[in-house]
Image (cartoon, rainbow, N blue to C red; front, side):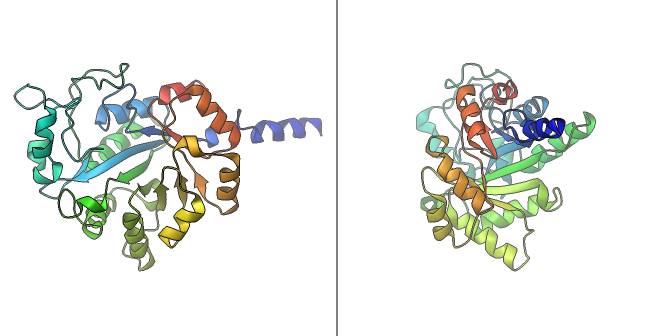
Length: 293
């Protein structure tokens, strides 16, 4: 009897049941590799990440490009001629105004992101979403590890509709038609700060034009109740900024059957605290730190 009690304690202790915690590599592993690049995603898999978190934008020729910014970031981008992109040039280097053949000529890895001094310096480009999935799934097969889950953030803002991105209907459709032949619905979730994206995706699920994959609401400090009211439905995943996570919020989410996965947690102490509080996972720039918990 005592053995069974000890076994139950082991399995239910959040400090010991790490396999149940969904550690999501933010933009791959931005803290140590160039963000949203294939080397970053492969490194995250090497570190044991269960979910690859990434962002997508749309190019002029309607390609789904993996990138957090919808422009060439002057902090770490190098032009095809080897010179650095300047801040003054970013407004003329919007992804939505460039064909992918042009975008892939810009390097986003050789210059370290100054915010992350541990980040490796290596040649890298902004890949297509299809390339990321194909390469990462191939890596998983080669190394005989479980295929990764993909948490795909659609970078969208109402102020940019039709200017620097498509409207939600087209944006969602472009992303879905890349995912449909590559992933089963249980292997990816769609997330966004733009609730119009999630509303449209849900509407397409209801009429069965889109698969029934999970939807994740990204927020800063809003409550789940307010988010649910604004959406008009209950999201599968609730992702607030980690500083606004509390035991009360976690309890309410779990009572509603909603997973809670905060962003972006980089301190091992904060990772451990959130884990003790009972989150379902967290998004981090440093999955190598999470691995040591």
